Length: 296
Ligand SMILES: N[C@@H](CCC(=O)N[C@@H](CSS)C(=O)NCC(=O)O)C(=O)O
Image (cartoon, rainbow, N blue to C red; front, top):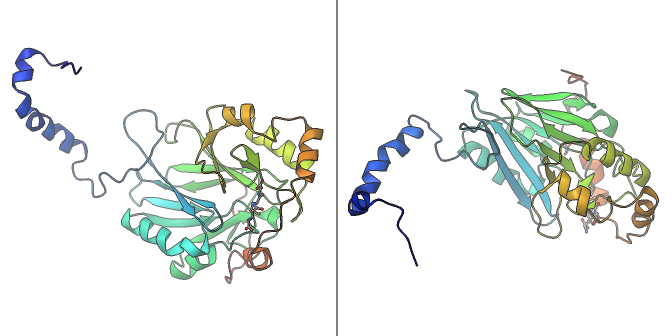
């Protein structure tokens, strides 16, 4: 049965209701060139300042994330973990949304695919590549724990989360009125949904990964959204609280975790021999490595 919540007077005026509501809806987006392109936002309050998109590359099951401050006149944007195969898609989207891409960032030196960073820099020379100093890779900006990557009035905080590789970092949205709530953590391969990155190459260490996740990610507020670099089961997002309860590996004690990681029995990634050397220079690019982001 369907009940009408309208008073009899309004019920009889029903055909005209869209006309009455229309001006109000249009006013909300008046003079906004990109109205309707705000995307998913987790902001408190009325205005959404963060444009956020989760993008997928199916061959390596990699997530790329696009973030932009659309309250800033230049609409500065960044990509986290772009993949070479999907660079054209990602740059077309950035252009469609009227964004100015300023950073192409990596959470670590990937072993299963070539980063899109080099291709992006070839197409948009103003874009700066970002990776951790601990990765020993070349990039325009080498970050360390505590650094902040600013885009418009927002920033991402860098946390060191080694263990899958020596140089893994997690990027976390800042706190404050300009930032999204809940916070968003881009965990790379350190923490996957209900799992975690393997620890059997590239300086991987299961004890270190256990400590990284517990001290740097599980210490965040439980409602913090977890966005990993990969998913092999169809998951898209989790929360810190959810992973603290249900992660199949990291909910165990450290010894059990280590034993699980030693017995994963995974074959090496198919692309590893191509991907690692390419990603050590952020995807075949000519850069002069320098540290410029220390505790900005
Ligand atoms: N089969 C894929 C590689 C799959 C794989 O090893 N994934 C890594 C992250 S990329 S290095 C991983 O850590 N997986 C953890 C897990 O539990 O699956 C390929 O050949 O590329």
